[in-house]
Image (tube, rainbow, N blue to C red; front, side, top):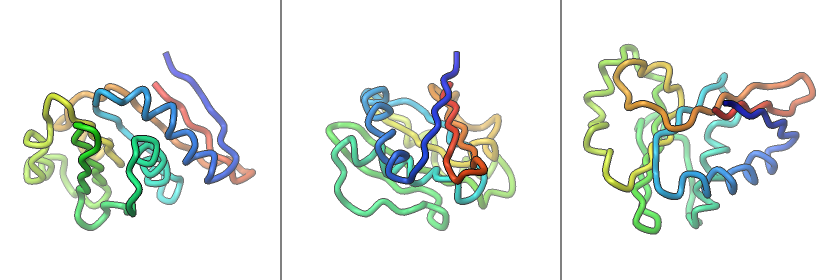
Length: 138
C-alpha cells in the first residue's frame, strides 16, 4: 500500500522528516528515488533533524556514505548516483553498515538494484509544475 503527499515548500519537505523519523526509529532500509535536485537530501536532513541531529547534513555525492550515531541508532546516508555498476556497492562495505539498530537512507537506490538489502520503505519524489513535490511512500 502506498501513500501520496504533496509538499509545496522546502520547509514542508524538512517537516515531513518528523513522521518518517518516528516510523524509522528502530532502523530499516529506505530507498529514495527522484531526479537530481528534487529534494532527496533535504528529506534526509529533515529525518536526521527529527531524530535529534543538529550538525550539518551534506549530500554524500563524493564520499558516497555519510554516517551518524543518534540515540543508539547507526544511520548511514548513501548516494549511489556516481556508481557505474551495482557491484561497486560491495566496495562500500554495505554489509558492515547493517547492524541490529541501523538505518540506511539510500539515494539513487535503483543503481544498486540486486545488491542492496531489501527496502523497508520506498520514497519516490517528483517535481510538479508549480514547484511543489509529490512524494509516494510505500
